[in-house]
Amino acid sequence: MGKTKETFVERRKYVRLQVPLGISYTLPGSGRVMQAATKNISADGARFETVDPELKENTVVEIKLEMPGASNPIHAKGTIIWRKRVSLEDGAPFDCGLEFIEIEEDNKNTFLKFLCDLIYGIGKEKRKD
Image: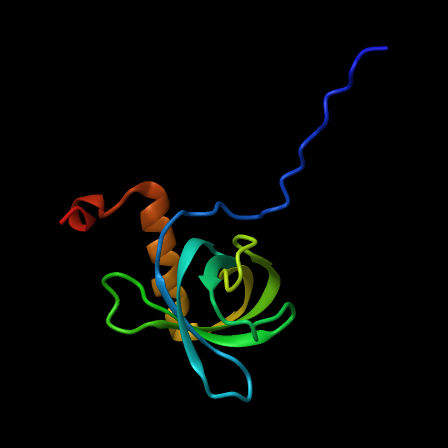
């Protein structure tokens, strides 16, 4: 009997773009605003690193994404889908996976245009400064 080749099934709907964007989030009921940076982003979510031990799976957070060239941040809500420590060291930060559940209507076009520009390489000349 020969070995069978395992089949990889891609579950993501959208391409992930490796881009660091400033992100701030607020935990419900706490009023605390935490700062972080994305590791990657797509049309339906983002991955970011945080040191916040209170950010748990299934938590809904209010977020603001800083977009280069935009006069205002993108306001959205998201659910923390997964969280894991970056390393085994004490106090190591967490990587978190966030799924967008709502993006303010007046921010959607700015957000989607930014993603499309990244995908198609539009504006690279401007970002090389």
